Image (cartoon, rainbow, N blue to C red):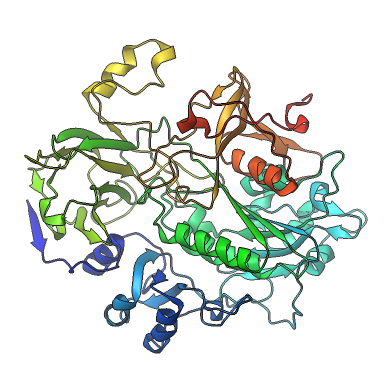
Amino acid sequence: MAKNTRGLPPDPSDLYLRWGITHGFGNLFQQQGSVGLLIQWKSPADAKAAVKFIPADAQVPQIYLQPRGKPLRVPPFWALTVSIKSLPGFLSSIQHLAIAIDLAAPVAPNPFAVAQNLSPVHSKHHTLTAVLDDGCAFANERFRRANGTRVMWLWNQNASAPGAPVSFGYGAQWSKADLDSFFPALGGTQDEAYSDAGLAGLRRSAVHGTHVMDLLAGKDAGESHMSDIVFVQFPQEGIDDPSGRWLSHFAFDGLLYVVACAGLATKRIVVNISWGPQTGPHDGTYVMEALIEWLVLEQKSIGRELIVTLAAGNSFSAKAHACVNYAAGGSFDWILPPDGEIQAFVEFWWPQSVLPANARLRVIAPGDAPVDLVVGSQSAVDLSWQAELGQVGASTRAILTVNPTGGTGVVKGRDGRWQFVILPTAGGIAEDIDVYVARADHNMGARRRAKASHLTDAGLEKQRFVAASDRDLEAPGSAIRRAGTLSGIATGRSSHVAAGYVLKPDAPAPYSSSGPTRGLRKVPDYAMMTDRSEARAGVRSAGVRTGTKVRLVGTSTAAPQLGRRLAEKILPKPPLPADPPRSGKGRVIPLISLIGPE
């Protein structure tokens, strides 16, 4: 049984935002009383017109409100935080001005940031490299020159980070001079430097961000390494949430922060983001992707090249994507484990010509009667799950949110076998409905337990009994697909997307996500080595402390390798790939430093 409520009419608001307004945002974000918004305006003029509607309790960084660049223009994007009580009125005032309004993580002012008279320091080098990640080991010799660290700015987005205020209003930043002052004196240690900088995560021997930063910009024989580095440290509350719903706000602001650090001499900026969700439209229209497209064109207009490298994703074998023909219909199951400590999400995306009234989806929760979704909001009688079906832009979408199946919540979600039935539509268009499950496997450095759910059906179950060499093939008769699994922010046209491959036997990495997408981008750009061999998984790169090396597995290591090649313009022409959906233009031979003696 379920109760139905009348949903909002089609508007630019994301379904998560509509769901949150109806159901109180559930357990989505820890900070109560406010939410974040990502807004893509129809034009810069509409962005200016929206200023008069900003609620008094909203936090909108000035960088979104003031002209920037040459020619001067206001970015047609905002990332802001607004109170829940002011949200409905604000949305009704601005929805006619916006292309998209997405729910994002809220941010709070940092009471620990110490005001300083910071003179604007911009890079004086031709190339500026940047990492948006977790864990900046600035004291490691891999990132130092004779005059100190190459990290010219470090923005720690954690709510209580020490340092100087940032123009975005949250977290805190350290300049190169600050970081150099933390370097250990005679008899001191790098650990003390990291402690003084407030980087508690660097107590570990290996961190994701340092590994990635070394692959992107670490020392290598015969190279000058004259570029500066900007590091944006993602907040811990985001790292603890593997779903990726938090990522967009912090990466959104981080990209603009990096661009603001460039100087007059800077002609190339290379930004690496080795994070990404499994959910999203997968057609290049996500607001985060639209910002990348706009920034690339904006920087080009002033004679500067902006290169944004993204990981293809690690969900090829995650059983997190399904396709069901709209006309023929079909069914499959979703296995949701017990003791999960985060909310679980599933997204359904119909072909663009299908209206919400013609979207036919039946949900059968464990132990419950079937429920046919209707346009608008629905929830289980016990409020353990909620659904939202509607149109956003040109697409009909549905989301299903399930409360954590573990933890201390009052109403726990139903763990077990859920069933989704796409009812057939006589005479309907013979195109696929795409289904994406949000990630739930933990991020490196996360403190929260995570339980990965997955999709299955009879066709996929039969594949368990085929030869090992055939297990990476699509299962005959199954709705569960390995294709179409690129990261939800890696489907835009202007970003550079890196997949992974195993050097020996020169084959795609078993986890490396695949095209095609629902939009114009169909495949990743290149595949980089992410595993030495089938017996020697991962790529070696810098640990936290000078002289240490660690191995990391995943396309997180592919993106910075591609960024390094593009920054130094040493990308060789690879041979034609055997499978473009997995390798794009081809598999790039790794740098000698990555395949040398271990």
